[in-house]
Amino acid sequence: MQIKDYFFKKKLTTSFEFFPPRSQKASDNLFETIKKLVPLKPTYVSVTYGAGGTTRELTNDLVIKLHKETKLTIVPHLTCVGSTRKDMEKIITNYQDNGIQNIMVLRGDIPKNESIDLSKNDFKHAVDLVRFIKKIHPQMGIGVAGFPEGHPECTNRLLEIDYLKEKVDAGVDYICTQLFFDNKDYFDYIDRCQLAGINIPIIPGVMPITSLSNLKRMADLAQGVRFPAKLLKSVIRTSNDSQVFDVGIHWAAEQASGLLDNNVPGIHFYTLNKYESIIQICKSLGISTLDELTKEKLLSDKF
Ligand SMILES: Cc1cc2nc3c(=O)[nH]c(=O)nc-3n(C[C@H](O)[C@H](O)[C@H](O)COP(=O)(O)OP(=O)(O)OC[C@H]3O[C@@H](n4cnc5c(N)ncnc54)[C@H](O)[C@@H]3O)c2cc1C
Image (cartoon, rainbow, N blue to C red):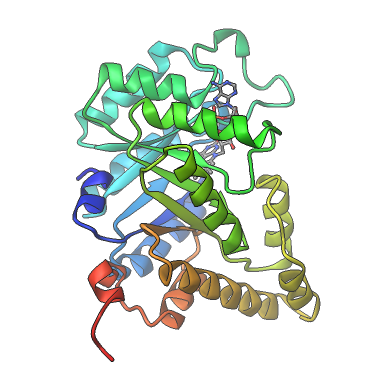
Protein backbone atom coordinates (compact mmCIF):
# COMPACT_ATOMS: atom_id res chain seq x y z
CA MET A 1 0.00 0.00 0.00
CA GLN A 2 1.21 3.49 -0.74
CA ILE A 3 1.69 5.80 2.24
CA LYS A 4 -0.43 8.46 0.53
CA ASP A 5 -3.43 6.08 0.66
CA TYR A 6 -3.36 6.26 4.46
CA PHE A 7 -3.61 10.03 4.29
CA PHE A 8 -6.56 9.77 1.91
CA LYS A 9 -8.23 7.50 4.47
CA LYS A 10 -7.60 10.24 7.05
CA LYS A 11 -5.56 7.80 9.11
CA LEU A 12 -2.79 9.10 11.29
CA THR A 13 0.37 7.37 10.21
CA THR A 14 2.82 6.06 12.76
CA SER A 15 6.17 4.74 11.72
CA PHE A 16 9.40 3.36 13.13
CA GLU A 17 12.81 3.87 11.63
CA PHE A 18 15.49 1.16 11.81
CA PHE A 19 19.03 0.95 10.51
CA PRO A 20 20.46 -2.22 8.95
CA PRO A 21 22.51 -4.25 11.44
CA ARG A 22 26.13 -5.07 10.66
CA SER A 23 26.60 -8.22 12.77
CA GLN A 24 24.62 -11.34 13.62
CA LYS A 25 24.20 -10.14 17.21
CA ALA A 26 22.92 -6.73 16.06
CA SER A 27 20.59 -8.49 13.64
CA ASP A 28 19.19 -10.72 16.42
CA ASN A 29 18.64 -7.59 18.54
CA LEU A 30 16.85 -5.83 15.70
CA PHE A 31 14.51 -8.77 15.10
CA GLU A 32 13.76 -8.89 18.84
CA THR A 33 12.97 -5.15 18.67
CA ILE A 34 10.70 -5.65 15.68
CA LYS A 35 8.93 -8.54 17.44
CA LYS A 36 8.25 -6.27 20.42
CA LEU A 37 7.08 -3.34 18.28
CA VAL A 38 4.85 -5.23 15.82
CA PRO A 39 1.92 -5.46 18.31
CA LEU A 40 1.78 -1.64 18.25
CA LYS A 41 0.73 -1.96 14.58
CA PRO A 42 2.69 0.88 12.96
CA THR A 43 1.53 2.12 9.55
CA TYR A 44 4.97 1.44 8.15
CA VAL A 45 8.59 0.92 9.14
CA SER A 46 11.52 2.47 7.32
CA VAL A 47 15.07 1.22 6.83
CA THR A 48 17.95 3.69 6.47
CA TYR A 49 20.60 3.60 3.75
CA GLY A 50 24.23 4.28 4.68
CA ALA A 51 25.60 7.47 3.13
CA GLY A 52 27.05 6.84 -0.31
CA GLY A 53 25.66 3.30 -0.44
CA THR A 54 27.77 2.01 2.47
CA THR A 55 24.87 -0.25 3.51
CA ARG A 56 23.51 -0.87 0.01
CA GLU A 57 23.29 -4.68 0.32
CA LEU A 58 22.45 -4.64 4.03
CA THR A 59 19.56 -2.23 3.48
CA ASN A 60 18.31 -4.17 0.48
CA ASP A 61 18.48 -7.54 2.28
CA LEU A 62 16.73 -6.24 5.39
CA VAL A 63 13.99 -4.54 3.35
CA ILE A 64 13.27 -7.66 1.28
CA LYS A 65 13.42 -9.96 4.33
CA LEU A 66 11.01 -7.77 6.33
CA HIS A 67 8.71 -7.44 3.33
CA LYS A 68 8.61 -11.21 2.79
CA GLU A 69 8.52 -12.38 6.41
CA THR A 70 6.27 -9.81 8.10
CA LYS A 71 3.02 -8.09 7.23
CA LEU A 72 4.65 -4.68 7.75
CA THR A 73 4.71 -2.00 5.06
CA ILE A 74 8.38 -1.29 4.45
CA VAL A 75 9.80 2.00 3.23
CA PRO A 76 13.46 1.77 2.21
CA HIS A 77 15.56 4.93 2.32
CA LEU A 78 17.72 5.61 -0.71
CA THR A 79 20.46 8.23 -1.03
CA CYS A 80 21.86 9.30 -4.38
CA VAL A 81 25.08 11.18 -3.60
CA GLY A 82 27.95 9.64 -5.54
CA SER A 83 25.64 7.31 -7.53
CA THR A 84 24.99 6.80 -11.20
CA ARG A 85 21.56 6.53 -12.82
CA LYS A 86 22.32 2.88 -13.50
CA ASP A 87 23.06 2.17 -9.79
CA MET A 88 19.82 3.79 -8.73
CA GLU A 89 17.72 2.16 -11.45
CA LYS A 90 18.94 -1.30 -10.41
CA ILE A 91 18.01 -0.77 -6.77
CA ILE A 92 14.63 0.84 -7.47
CA THR A 93 13.63 -1.75 -10.06
CA ASN A 94 14.55 -4.54 -7.66
CA TYR A 95 12.31 -2.96 -5.01
CA GLN A 96 9.51 -2.52 -7.52
CA ASP A 97 9.83 -6.17 -8.64
CA ASN A 98 9.67 -7.31 -5.01
CA GLY A 99 6.47 -5.41 -4.27
CA ILE A 100 7.93 -2.41 -2.42
CA GLN A 101 5.63 0.52 -3.12
CA ASN A 102 7.28 3.49 -1.38
CA ILE A 103 10.78 4.92 -1.13
CA MET A 104 12.21 7.64 1.12
CA VAL A 105 14.30 9.65 -1.35
CA LEU A 106 17.37 11.50 -0.05
CA ARG A 107 20.51 13.06 -1.32
CA GLY A 108 22.65 11.93 1.63
CA ASP A 109 25.42 13.90 3.26
CA ILE A 110 28.34 14.89 1.08
CA PRO A 111 31.34 13.17 2.71
CA LYS A 112 34.05 15.40 4.12
CA ASN A 113 36.75 12.84 3.23
CA GLU A 114 37.11 11.10 -0.13
CA SER A 115 35.17 7.96 0.82
CA ILE A 116 32.75 8.50 -2.07
CA ASP A 117 33.78 9.01 -5.69
CA LEU A 118 31.82 12.15 -6.55
CA SER A 119 32.99 12.06 -10.18
CA LYS A 120 30.36 9.33 -10.75
CA ASN A 121 27.62 11.52 -9.34
CA ASP A 122 24.56 11.70 -11.62
CA PHE A 123 22.40 13.41 -8.98
CA LYS A 124 23.14 16.76 -7.39
CA HIS A 125 20.11 16.98 -5.11
CA ALA A 126 17.33 14.73 -3.87
CA VAL A 127 14.96 16.43 -6.33
CA ASP A 128 16.97 14.89 -9.21
CA LEU A 129 16.38 11.39 -7.83
CA VAL A 130 12.68 12.13 -7.27
CA ARG A 131 12.38 13.16 -10.94
CA PHE A 132 14.31 10.08 -12.06
CA ILE A 133 12.07 7.70 -10.08
CA LYS A 134 8.93 9.40 -11.38
CA LYS A 135 10.26 8.84 -14.89
CA ILE A 136 11.19 5.16 -14.59
CA HIS A 137 8.59 3.98 -12.04
CA PRO A 138 5.86 6.65 -11.87
CA GLN A 139 3.69 4.53 -9.59
CA MET A 140 6.29 4.39 -6.78
CA GLY A 141 5.23 6.34 -3.65
CA ILE A 142 7.81 8.91 -2.54
CA GLY A 143 8.69 10.54 0.77
CA VAL A 144 11.43 13.15 1.24
CA ALA A 145 13.23 14.81 4.15
CA GLY A 146 12.35 18.18 5.69
CA PHE A 147 14.27 20.20 8.27
CA PRO A 148 12.15 22.28 10.67
CA GLU A 149 15.24 24.05 12.02
CA GLY A 150 16.85 24.36 8.60
CA HIS A 151 19.37 22.19 6.78
CA PRO A 152 22.92 23.10 7.84
CA GLU A 153 24.12 23.52 4.22
CA CYS A 154 21.55 26.18 3.28
CA THR A 155 21.69 29.30 5.42
CA ASN A 156 19.05 31.15 3.39
CA ARG A 157 15.80 29.99 5.02
CA LEU A 158 13.60 31.48 2.29
CA LEU A 159 15.53 29.81 -0.50
CA GLU A 160 15.50 26.55 1.41
CA ILE A 161 11.70 26.39 1.37
CA ASP A 162 11.75 27.17 -2.37
CA TYR A 163 14.03 24.15 -2.87
CA LEU A 164 11.66 22.04 -0.81
CA LYS A 165 8.73 23.22 -2.93
CA GLU A 166 10.67 22.26 -6.06
CA LYS A 167 11.24 18.79 -4.59
CA VAL A 168 7.56 18.41 -3.64
CA ASP A 169 6.40 19.55 -7.09
CA ALA A 170 8.52 16.80 -8.67
CA GLY A 171 5.98 14.27 -7.37
CA VAL A 172 6.41 13.72 -3.64
CA ASP A 173 3.64 12.24 -1.45
CA TYR A 174 4.83 13.27 1.99
CA ILE A 175 7.67 14.88 3.93
CA CYS A 176 9.20 13.34 7.05
CA THR A 177 11.12 15.71 9.27
CA GLN A 178 14.47 15.67 10.95
CA LEU A 179 14.15 15.15 14.70
CA PHE A 180 13.52 18.25 16.79
CA PHE A 181 12.88 18.87 20.48
CA ASP A 182 10.62 21.90 20.46
CA ASN A 183 7.22 21.52 18.79
CA LYS A 184 7.17 25.27 18.13
CA ASP A 185 9.89 24.73 15.51
CA TYR A 186 7.75 22.12 13.75
CA PHE A 187 4.56 24.23 13.81
CA ASP A 188 6.42 27.26 12.50
CA TYR A 189 7.89 25.10 9.72
CA ILE A 190 4.40 23.87 8.79
CA ASP A 191 3.19 27.46 8.53
CA ARG A 192 6.19 28.46 6.38
CA CYS A 193 5.63 25.46 4.10
CA GLN A 194 1.96 26.35 3.73
CA LEU A 195 2.85 29.94 2.85
CA ALA A 196 5.08 28.54 0.11
CA GLY A 197 2.21 26.42 -1.24
CA ILE A 198 3.45 23.08 0.12
CA ASN A 199 0.31 21.22 1.00
CA ILE A 200 1.35 17.58 1.36
CA PRO A 201 1.49 15.88 4.80
CA ILE A 202 4.58 16.73 6.87
CA ILE A 203 5.22 13.97 9.39
CA PRO A 204 7.14 15.08 12.50
CA GLY A 205 10.14 12.96 13.46
CA VAL A 206 10.53 12.24 17.18
CA MET A 207 13.58 10.69 18.79
CA PRO A 208 13.76 10.03 22.52
CA ILE A 209 17.06 10.65 24.29
CA THR A 210 17.95 7.38 25.98
CA SER A 211 21.41 8.04 27.46
CA LEU A 212 24.04 10.74 27.70
CA SER A 213 26.12 9.18 24.93
CA ASN A 214 23.00 8.94 22.75
CA LEU A 215 22.34 12.68 23.30
CA LYS A 216 25.91 13.54 22.27
CA ARG A 217 25.61 11.30 19.20
CA MET A 218 22.36 13.03 18.20
CA ALA A 219 24.03 16.44 18.44
CA ASP A 220 26.75 15.14 16.16
CA LEU A 221 24.53 13.42 13.59
CA ALA A 222 21.56 15.79 13.47
CA GLN A 223 23.60 18.94 13.05
CA GLY A 224 21.80 22.20 13.62
CA VAL A 225 19.20 20.62 15.91
CA ARG A 226 18.55 22.74 19.01
CA PHE A 227 18.49 21.20 22.48
CA PRO A 228 16.21 23.46 24.56
CA ALA A 229 17.72 24.65 27.86
CA LYS A 230 14.76 23.16 29.75
CA LEU A 231 15.60 19.72 28.36
CA LEU A 232 19.31 20.10 29.14
CA LYS A 233 18.52 21.24 32.70
CA SER A 234 16.49 18.06 33.24
CA VAL A 235 19.37 15.96 31.88
CA ILE A 236 21.89 17.77 34.09
CA ARG A 237 19.79 16.97 37.20
CA THR A 238 20.15 13.23 36.56
CA SER A 239 22.89 11.11 38.07
CA ASN A 240 22.88 8.05 35.80
CA ASP A 241 21.78 6.83 32.38
CA SER A 242 18.65 5.19 33.71
CA GLN A 243 17.46 8.64 34.86
CA VAL A 244 18.49 10.21 31.53
CA PHE A 245 16.33 7.54 29.88
CA ASP A 246 13.32 8.55 32.02
CA VAL A 247 13.88 12.25 31.20
CA GLY A 248 14.13 11.43 27.49
CA ILE A 249 10.93 9.36 27.52
CA HIS A 250 9.06 12.05 29.43
CA TRP A 251 10.18 14.75 26.95
CA ALA A 252 9.38 12.67 23.86
CA ALA A 253 5.98 11.63 25.26
CA GLU A 254 5.09 15.28 25.99
CA GLN A 255 6.24 16.21 22.49
CA ALA A 256 4.19 13.44 20.88
CA SER A 257 1.15 14.34 22.93
CA GLY A 258 1.46 18.03 21.93
CA LEU A 259 1.76 16.99 18.28
CA LEU A 260 -1.26 14.69 18.39
CA ASP A 261 -3.32 17.43 20.04
CA ASN A 262 -2.54 19.67 17.07
CA ASN A 263 -3.74 17.60 14.16
CA VAL A 264 -0.46 16.24 12.82
CA PRO A 265 -0.74 13.76 9.92
CA GLY A 266 1.26 11.16 11.87
CA ILE A 267 4.39 10.62 13.94
CA HIS A 268 7.66 9.04 12.88
CA PHE A 269 9.78 7.53 15.66
CA TYR A 270 13.52 7.24 15.27
CA THR A 271 14.06 3.99 17.23
CA LEU A 272 17.84 3.42 16.97
CA ASN A 273 16.76 -0.26 16.78
CA LYS A 274 15.52 -0.18 20.41
CA TYR A 275 11.98 -0.91 21.58
CA GLU A 276 11.83 -0.03 25.30
CA SER A 277 11.61 3.74 24.83
CA ILE A 278 8.96 3.52 22.09
CA ILE A 279 6.76 1.16 24.11
CA GLN A 280 6.99 3.44 27.15
CA ILE A 281 6.12 6.54 25.11
CA CYS A 282 3.06 4.83 23.64
CA LYS A 283 2.00 3.65 27.10
CA SER A 284 2.25 7.15 28.51
CA LEU A 285 0.16 8.43 25.59
CA GLY A 286 -2.50 5.88 26.52
CA ILE A 287 -2.03 3.99 23.28
CA SER A 288 -1.95 0.22 23.05
CA THR A 289 -1.94 -0.05 19.27
CA LEU A 290 -0.86 2.77 17.04
CA ASP A 291 -3.42 1.98 14.36
CA GLU A 292 -6.07 3.16 16.82
CA LEU A 293 -4.77 6.64 16.14
CA THR A 294 -7.39 7.80 13.70
CA LYS A 295 -8.49 11.41 13.50
CA GLU A 296 -11.94 10.19 14.60
CA LYS A 297 -10.40 8.82 17.78
CA LEU A 298 -8.71 12.12 18.56
CA LEU A 299 -12.03 13.86 18.13
CA SER A 300 -13.91 11.18 20.08
CA ASP A 301 -17.02 11.89 22.10
CA LYS A 302 -15.62 10.05 25.12
CA PHE A 303 -16.31 12.97 27.38
C1 LIG B 1 13.74 11.76 7.66
C2 LIG B 1 15.19 11.69 7.27
C3 LIG B 1 15.74 10.48 6.88
C4 LIG B 1 17.09 10.40 6.51
N1 LIG B 1 17.61 9.19 6.14
C5 LIG B 1 18.90 9.10 5.74
C6 LIG B 1 19.46 7.86 5.31
O1 LIG B 1 18.79 6.81 5.32
N2 LIG B 1 20.75 7.83 4.89
C7 LIG B 1 21.51 8.98 4.88
O2 LIG B 1 22.69 8.89 4.47
N3 LIG B 1 21.02 10.17 5.27
C8 LIG B 1 19.74 10.26 5.70
N4 LIG B 1 19.23 11.47 6.10
C9 LIG B 1 20.11 12.65 6.10
C10 LIG B 1 20.11 13.39 4.73
O3 LIG B 1 20.54 12.54 3.71
C11 LIG B 1 21.06 14.59 4.85
O4 LIG B 1 20.56 15.50 5.78
C12 LIG B 1 21.42 15.30 3.55
O5 LIG B 1 22.45 16.24 3.81
C13 LIG B 1 20.27 16.07 2.92
O6 LIG B 1 19.46 15.23 2.24
P1 LIG B 1 18.16 15.79 1.46
O7 LIG B 1 17.50 14.62 0.90
O8 LIG B 1 17.40 16.74 2.31
O9 LIG B 1 18.90 16.62 0.30
P2 LIG B 1 18.44 17.79 -0.66
O10 LIG B 1 16.98 17.91 -0.76
O11 LIG B 1 19.21 17.59 -1.92
O12 LIG B 1 18.99 19.08 0.10
C14 LIG B 1 20.35 19.16 0.49
C15 LIG B 1 20.77 20.65 0.60
O13 LIG B 1 20.73 21.24 -0.70
C16 LIG B 1 19.80 22.31 -0.75
N5 LIG B 1 19.11 22.20 -2.05
C17 LIG B 1 18.09 21.37 -2.39
N6 LIG B 1 17.74 21.54 -3.66
C18 LIG B 1 18.57 22.49 -4.17
C19 LIG B 1 18.71 23.10 -5.44
N7 LIG B 1 17.91 22.77 -6.46
N8 LIG B 1 19.69 24.04 -5.60
C20 LIG B 1 20.51 24.39 -4.59
N9 LIG B 1 20.40 23.85 -3.34
C21 LIG B 1 19.45 22.90 -3.13
C22 LIG B 1 18.86 22.10 0.42
O14 LIG B 1 18.30 23.32 0.88
C23 LIG B 1 19.80 21.47 1.45
O15 LIG B 1 20.54 22.46 2.12
C24 LIG B 1 17.90 11.57 6.51
C25 LIG B 1 17.35 12.80 6.92
C26 LIG B 1 16.01 12.86 7.31
C27 LIG B 1 15.41 14.16 7.76
